[in-house]
Image (cartoon, rainbow, N blue to C red):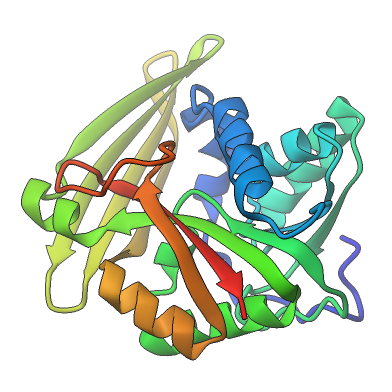
Amino acid sequence: MPCVKLCRRAELEVFGQYAQYYDLFYGEKDYRGEVDYVDALIKKYALGDARTILDLGCGTAGHAVLLAQKGYNVTGVDRSDTMLSIAEEKKRQMKVSVELWNGDICSVELDKRFDVAIAMFAVIGYQTTNERLESALTNTAKHLNPGGLFIFDAWFGPAVIAQKPQDKMLVAEAGAEKIIRFTHPELDILTHTVSVNFNVLHIANDKVLQSVEEMHKMRFFFPKELEFVLAKTGYKVVEMYPFMDFCAKLTENDWNMVVIARRT
């Protein structure tokens, strides 16, 4: 990893053994459509010609490599070594330049500023305490040029409470092998969090090769809450939309929202 001097080592892996199956589970995710959406938001709301992007919680670089293909200068940050190793291979295969750093988005120090920061696929939702949320937003603002954009998606609180998280099962096949993921979420309305319990079974020839259990605690948000904490940490909210939309108002049917904020 290139992160040696400037970036502090992450204290823990958010994705442990689960990371090795990440791209398999999300192989059908519309990364290209999401990148087109982010690109359109940048073109709509950026002040001037935005060319540099900081991708926070970049994971396996699904968004970063496609943004690089569009001509952006992209730097990705993640605290999972496994994710970053996959990202390195992905950028090599796609023949694009993306700078990758191992670090916690609350404390990473890159010693440079960007036109845009993004945090996709509910990365901000992993900041489950007010302290971590403020640290992540403050540290992001430190890495943005004045007037720069911060674009992130998150779970929309009213929809989470109205719809309630449900148990799910996902089956993915890799050749003759099968990966089964069971998801059991536990809602806590007092802390605005959902404990997402994953149980992953890796099966071949009717035998379990590996069993992985991980719990990911996710936070959901409300508009006024976000307006308050973003203003406190150096931003002004530009817009909030249902994710992948440009003009609709958020409703209880919209589990995912996108937030566009500008560094003041």
